[in-house]
Image 1: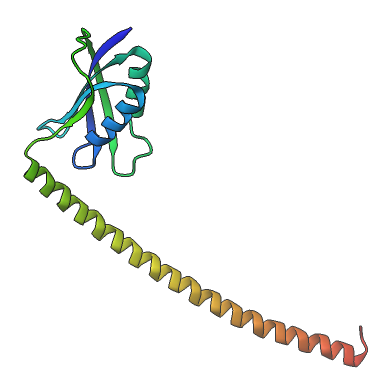
Image 2: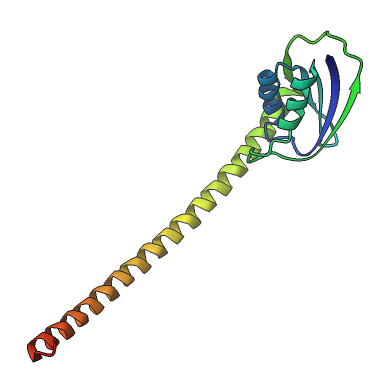
Length: 158
């Protein structure tokens, strides 16, 4: 049975590629419709398709494995199937404004990645230094142990 759903998605769903993500999921499940940003920070999705495809689509819209997207809620309402949609698309607002926001967000993520990389490199350097110290200490202990063993053998105790 064919259905039409309107889905209101809240959370961190704007400026993180959610509309494009919804398009990929829709194409995977044979769903037609569109996704658009709303002024309150949510995303509205209008979707048409068969019941099973729509159920899988809604489940996948939770974006559990997506690193930038955080879906807090999906509010789903059903309306009469129209059959007028022929594909799924992401609706965009002012192109220049959206590109500016995405570029700005990309720069922020890049900065955070660089900070994390620097911290990771520092930790790796500290670990390498600690391993070198452990190797030196192990070498010293091995030398002491070899001397003890040699002394035992020369005294004829063993």
